[in-house]
Length: 189
Image (cartoon, rainbow, N blue to C red):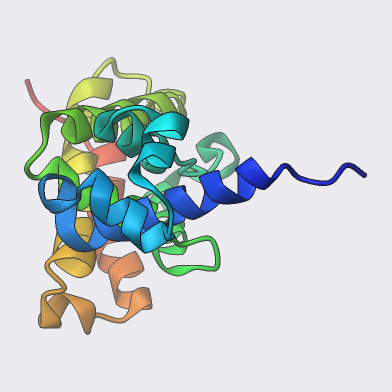
């Protein structure tokens, strides 16, 4: 087994602090100086390893949503499966600062907004498309995004007390039913 490079530990520290600060402060208020100070390194090291603030953000906001294989889920349970996976990713053991950073930044920064759309389209899009037969993928995915992004913003960024207080099983049941309708009910054009 090879010993990790010292530079990898520094990179990891920079990324961890960048994720934390982007999540707490948003993209606009987070600076390279603040990230360097939080990581206890010189600003030049941040620039050396990651280039610009935008490049660092792109790296810090890189994540795998681990979208479930919807083809293996009974058709009437797919909405619940999507919401369950979403909550696991936000609140489970693999939760971190990447998602809050991305959602908070997407509200005010175009590159972050584009990154969120890209992640959803690349990771969730194929799974959802594979279960649809009616050619209305874009409309259905757009409606699903309204529910998931609304929950993400309200629960994890705004931290609205009424939304934070919702029980996980209630979110899965009710929001899952809404997403299920978007997946299975006829959408008139």
